Image 1 (cartoon, one colour):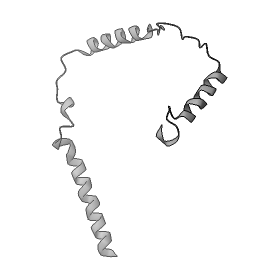
Image 2 (image 1 turned 120 degrees about the vertical axis):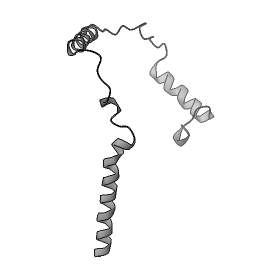
Image 3 (image 1 turned 45 degrees about the horizontal axis):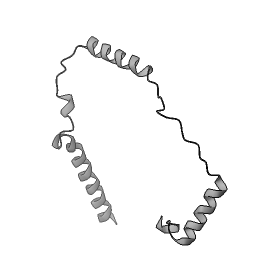
Image 4 (image 1 turned 180 degrees about the vertical axis):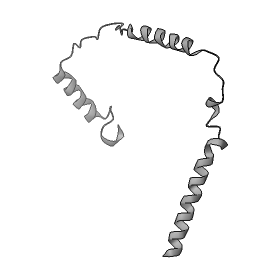
Length: 94
C-alpha cells in the first residue's frame, strides 16, 4: 500500500514539473517578448474609435421572411405520406 502511494506521489510530481516547463518549451511566452511600437495614448485613441464605431452597428435584414402558402396540416400530411413511401429519413437514419 505504501509503495503504490509513493509511486503515485512521484508520478504527480513528475507531471507537475513537466507542466511547469511547458511554457518555455513550446513558446507560450512569445507575445510578451515583443516590444510595443505605439504609445499608450495612441492605443487608447484606437480603442475609443473602435468602440464608437461598434456602438453604431445596426443589423438590417436584406429581405423579409417569405410567408408560407401551405397550412400546417397540409405539411404534416405530406410528411406522413413521404415517410410511409420511404422518401425521407426517419428514426436513427436522420
